[in-house]
Structures are given as structure tokens and as C-alpha cells.
Image (cartoon, rainbow, N blue to C red; front, side):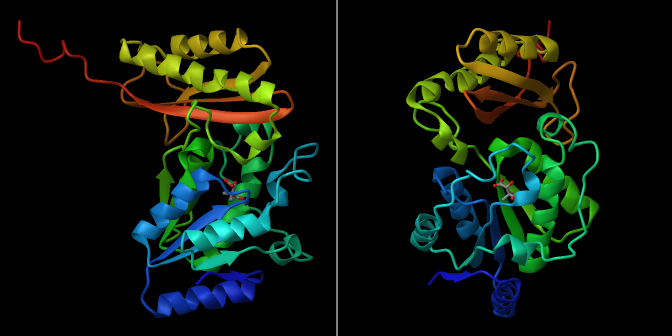
Length: 292
Ligand code: PAF
């Protein structure tokens, strides 16, 4: 049975009871408007944990002025139904006042990682994310928490925060779920008109070019980024914000690609800001072990 609660006291009590029963606790933090991508996180949590909570909270502190906080979709009934279908134990859907009561004055900030890539275009965004995720970790005290690899920067930052603060939680990344035509699933895809939806396919197409280039031997990060930039410059209706070719853990820019590499981008399609990325691995050079 899925229990839906709105208060901090109730979520604490429910999680404490699960802990008392010796169950492994999983947490899937979300902002709602749940889709297959969220469902895959939920299923990963269900597979590994005896008790799973999903939080649904459109967190105001991670939206900047002029961003889409007010119009962000909030289909709470449909979200709760998905959670019931997926066998979730607890849905925690607090109000903003419950999460940030009068006098709230604390922020959690992961310096450095939070300022680059999306952080350069959304100042303060990751401080809002870290603060709310830290609160959710404190309330639920999960053994494991599940995040999508589509938000690769968020995942790296939450991992850093958990390590830096010695939080006893395993931060799990789950693969991006895509529509059949390749568009990464996102609650914000709902903003796209049919024409914009087609234009947005340039994002996964550009990343697929990066993958092909790596597969055919490209090792130079600047050339890889230029390839993605060129592909998107030629795409109608797409306004690129950044392309980053970075280490997936540290988010440091790479020059020559040695092992794993994250190629991440953000772009506006119409008024909608979309992000996407691909995690690539340098394949061993077949000539490396050849004996002459
Ligand atoms: O990825 C999201 O949906 C949000 O950033 C999160 C992690 C739920 C924090 O509000």
C-alpha cells in the first residue's frame, strides 16, 4: 500500500518504522510530472530496497527569477497513481512552507562543480538542489538514493556533497531513458510544440555524432566539442548554451580523452531549456598490444 504524506513529522515516522523493521530504505527524489525516466529510477530502487519513498516537490530554491517555477507541471494525482502502480511505499509531497518554514536560513553549496556548465546559466540552481536533497536525506535517511544520469552534473554534485558531508547514503545513477526517436525524457518536453519537439531531436543527433567520432578514433576533446557545436549551429530552432567535454566525476574539462568522458550540453528550443548528455568510454586502441 502506498502511503501519501505531506509533513516532515510523518515522513520521519514512516521511515523510522521501516528502519525498525530492518528494511533497506530507498529514496527517489523528484519534482513530480513523473515519466518513464522516473519509473526507471523507482524500479531500480524497488529492486534494491525493501522500502521505497518517492518525494514530489517542485523546489522553489532551485529556480531562478524568470525560470519556469510557476508553470512547472504539477499532476499530483497522476504521479501518486504511478507510484501506487510501481508499488512505492511512501509518497512525500510537502508544501514549500513545510520544507522552508519561516526563518529558514541554511544553504548547502558544492563549490566549483556548481558554477560551471548549467550552473553558469542558472546561478544558485545547484545550491537549491543540494539544500533540498540534503534535507530529504536527513528526513528519510535512505540507504540508497536514485538519480537520473540525464542530470549528469546534478549527479556528480550530489555525489560530491554526500562524500564531503559523510552522508551514509549510496548515490545511484540510472541510465537516461529516451523516447523511441532518441529525445531524452524530461518533464519539460511537455512545453515543446510539435515543431519544437522535432527540432529538439538535433540534441541527441549531435551527441550521437560525438559517439561516432569517438568510435572512429577521435581523442581530442576540443574537436569533439566543435563537432557537436557545428551540428547544433546548423539545426533550426536550437540555441546552444554550452557543450562540455568533461570528466564525469570531477566535471573537469578534458583535453585528450583517456578513459570515460561526459559530453554534456544545454540548449534552448523555443522557450524551453533542454539538457542532454552521453557518457562515452575510450575504446582500447587495437594497435596498442600488437607485437611487431
Ligand atoms: O532532478 C530533480 O528532479 C530535482 O533537481 C531534485 C533532485 C528532485 C531536487 O529537487
